[in-house]
Image 1 (cartoon, rainbow, N blue to C red):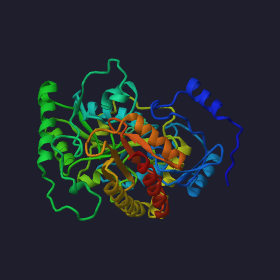
Image 2: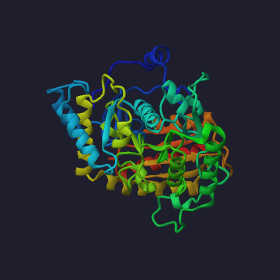
Image 3: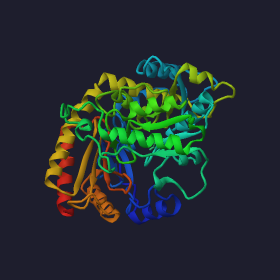
Length: 452
Ligand code: PLP
């Protein structure tokens, strides 16, 4: 049941969004879309047109727009209690923490509640510095970790760094990107096609990337002592980049030797998104020292968490940690419901199976269209990197924007990302069906034909 027809003209929409509230990424949106209603994997605009949501609010809407169980949980909370801060505790905070920690390794049982990925990563930096007594932080090139002034320093993606001075002590190591970097990487061992690789994970490329991380430690950091290394399990905003086997494990060990801890930014990769494991870090065979969570945690309500060890939390007790909205009861109720839905509806298993089906279809498209330079990802965190046929040259921004617009016109919403916006990102709500995948692939097929 779609309630639309708000009587708004596109001119008025354009005027309001361009003059009073500019779009986040100006270059992508040549014409704004005014969305009005959502139902599971579908979105409806103000004129009632339907779109398959392959972006999922940049992975926030984990189990579907207007998921009835989440709506019921939030509605119930709405009638009971909205907010108390973390000074006075309420039962939904308790329930959420209990459920969340039951999904995490035994070592990671101290939870801080907060509101966004940016705040979570900010707190992780404070925890790492308090615990280690060191100041320097390393993250990966082309990463995105948030947009506050300190996150702008941690984030290496140039398009999100304003040309202003950022806090000192942040360094960026080369991102192990098998498609883009000179050392490549074993394509098979990160492929989602089951059993396609028999390699041990000790690829030459992993050695090279680790050597480069060593160089950062040796030549950029005073005394070679570091507070933390931040990485995602799959680099999301940077273009859904999967790292060669063994890299994260060896990086964690190396950082430990230099006095630092490993922070897994699971803002995109948590909550079953990568299909074969509940947390992305599990697929690297490691246990991080700190995990930061946001996005899909509460199906789109602002909520986030930092999880760490008792020892690290104890080093952080010399001052208070507080922010007004953290632990909000509506968001916590949604958080509890998300964890229940993932279990009750076998979302992880569905995500793995539908993700495998999706990537196989994308690989078939790649065989037809040389414009698709690379297909990658895992679970429902997938991407196609688009290039000038026969080269690895990025498809131009102009072409990407027109393609994005065309997909939108045909009823498919995707994300654009990567270093140069030439990556089509596919991160839908995890309730997407095989029929939806077939629809999306037929639209991709039509659009690629026009652009080939
Ligand atoms: N970390 C990662 C990996 C992200 O993708 C993002 C946002 O896209 C953030 C942190 C920042 O989260 P937020 O936008 O909730 O502040």
